[in-house]
Image (cartoon, rainbow, N blue to C red; front, side):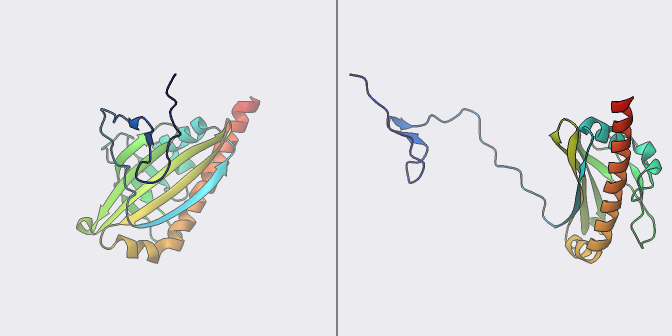
Length: 188
């Protein structure tokens, strides 16, 4: 007569074990999930009716940001991990600042992350543009920054509304440009 196995137990001291003994552990070590950066997060999200490839093409082309981007009216450099780029930041009601962020990570059609450090690391920011496809021709773009370091969170709270308005303006301009390019390609 065959031996029947019982149901997997989902709770209690024997969770994730079968009636025939514990599960055999994988030979690969389990890594803990990455920790989210600490600090104050400011972001703006927008839906764009264009494929991720079109949106990425616009984001990736730093030299042409001056044609559409009100928040970064000038950017130059090469998007490579570890590479410094140059950008001018024009937030509403603030003087234009020149920045030299370092590219931390990028994945075509998905994300661009860069980092800035001020005052000897007392203020650190992680800037991100992330593209999430929702359909073949529609995406959500997260455009934001995390203010960390000893003094970063207080700066983020103080500048939050202004930074938010800048990200919103950038997202609206990105949406207009991507949807125009996509309509031209789709109809042409």
